Image (cartoon, rainbow over all chains, first blue to last red; front, side, top):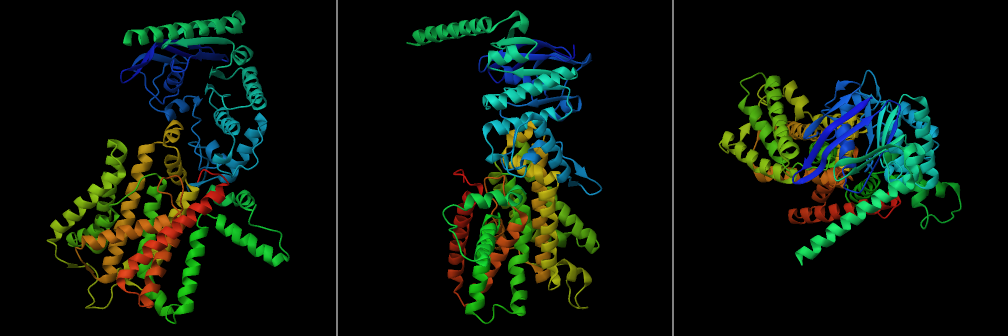
Length: 257
Length: 353
């Protein structure tokens, strides 16, 4: 077990984002995280990568207590995330975004080693098979899929061995998406990298994940190997949840009237 | 900077509609150069500055003389330094309205601590300015007050404080006594004819390098462009903001001392200080720095200051009534900004501008 999350809770003011979440990640595993919008998936990812601190609960990383104080801290321990909003800076170029907070410096003066960073960016993007014409162009000019590819490439390229990918395919077409899934497959083959991936498409979950966790109302309500579940089962769970939520909303509406 | 290196794609984006087929390589080359210039971030202000300078050179005899260049310097160099610091903050998405107050405060403090030898006294004065920046940064980045409000408060408080410590009386600038001839200190720190120009060029070059080629610069753009994303990437957003406030106050303090040494005395004149503030911010804005953050250059601020200086100086040579002066300046700023916005839209090749 490379990462364990035990009984983590997180509140934002009156809103309970995570009620009591326990999640386990094995080494070399790809864990799919499913759940309705607002169920707490992104919050959980942000807690694991050190961007948010939990109100309660504990985490263990490679057998040691894990309390990340910051994103930098988590990164130094080998955990890196692709955020849902991608955390790209529109005004900066492709390669500057690629190396944001990981800039290479040309000693002895503290100047950025732009040439090295550009070359490595080119290499990393080629490896994924995503074609981006100009690495000097500000990322504002790129398509949604290209931007997402840069965010994914940045994290994969970071030498972290626990990757958190929050909807890495959301803005991508089928072709770009399949390249990213190929990349994840290659990482899985290496056996060195463990991945938690938030996804919405069950076909993607069943194709690339070893195990699936479903998060509902701030708790993990399902934890199964993907081999023991199916698109039908996952769909049914979520449809039921949707029905329950709608009935609850209707009851509330009726009560208010 | 991305926009400069990306000028190739930008100029192709700008091409349709305006670049018809042309005969003659020279013509198309000139057109290409013009287009390339316009797609530079500072392009439009460079063009406007050249046009304005050409106008004054053509219509007056006095403008294009070495003597006038020397007259022009104090209208330009101090504002280039003020704009340099302000550019960092504005790219950061913040603004510092207290630079005029710091400009006023620094030489008075320099006078107050002049029991010390000159250089230590100067260092104390500049450190105090940096503390002012630290306070601005603390209230903006940590307490979370909008920088417009924080620095507006600082402007009033610091100008008041300066009036208190000076008893509202002018004082001679330390180290500028002319009894034994101009001291080396005075010549270096603003008294020499080209002293302010050299300071301005040195500061602008260093800060442009910092902005374009160091982490500090990249993080400043990142925090101004996408504050939340920068934080998610692990950038210490508060530290970046505070650092830039300190830099901005330091620049203002340096200008305050340079000007006090140049004029050999310090007037406790808040309204003069406020007009310095406006000119400093104008220079930054004219130079293409966006108030909204994320974009701007220190060199642009320098050119903005040059344009302001040329307008000021040229209008005076033409004998324009002082009342018309600010009217023309105001119109010039708006025209320059309109040009910048238009060119910015062409440059990014999108409707987002």
